[in-house]
Length: 94
Image (tube, rainbow, N blue to C red):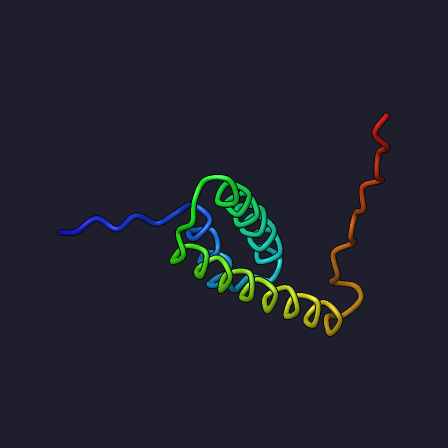
């Protein structure tokens, strides 16, 4: 049996792709996006792994599609069922 290494960002991305509950999907997309961006930051300083870069590019494209679908479905949802968006105020660096 061969062991297949799957990066954490990739596992989180797949979890977001297969999520069917719209309320859970929003959270999974957010978590996956953060993991992908974190890995991009790591790769910028430590790797030229072209295969992983290509996988990340594909994942970013997939996340954009999921985000559009989330927005589209939230526009079509009845107003009473929408979850309010909470926006945190920006803090200035002093």
